[in-house]
Image: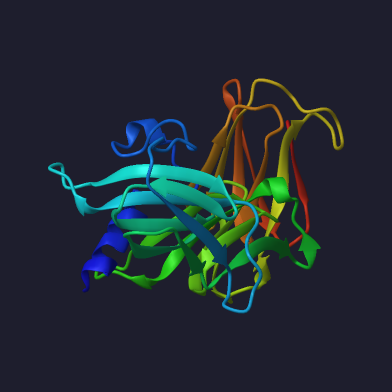
Length: 292
């Protein structure tokens, strides 16, 4: 691996995925002000980025970071300056720098030697976007019920993949370097999941609709069919194999379950009641259990 590739990997490793709660001020290398930079005389380094070689310049949403090209005593690359926007200019003393261009989760790094004059550098990210949604049984799923996680395609020796973005909302465009990614879609919070390998092409937004086989369920203990739910209940849902997948003390809990056969058990005071029910893709179920 070349020196530049090693530094690129180190820089990318410092960038946190969606869902992380780490702050720049705690990272050990970045100032709390994302637009801070050295106010010193030197030469201008003007940087610009495009998604593809033939594309137009990106005019907003970029994050530019300028690093020292050599690690310090702590083994980290010192962050010298950072700016946001489209095309930006840094005023830097003569020297060699590693400049990282980030556009969402897409990025590129260049080693730049600033010697005796102002220079301009163009970055071609070779990046695109990924926009995700899902249906079940041909029925569109409400975006608020969906969350997606994006992973690298390749697995390590233990079968694990590197996480790129966690809990991505439906319909949001995630910017990524061109390539193929492994996507996990969660419908609800129980057991309705689906996976797919999706390709992102440079300069394009890949719109993908994943297909779930699941449906929402509402549970009620009632004294008569169609009646109001009885209070003081404790619910348990078991799969056909006896695996417990859900518990709740809500009066009328709502949840999403994958396709299959289940048993609902509800306790009211000293008494317990049971009922089997089936889940079919896209068909909402209203499971009522009678007190008698």
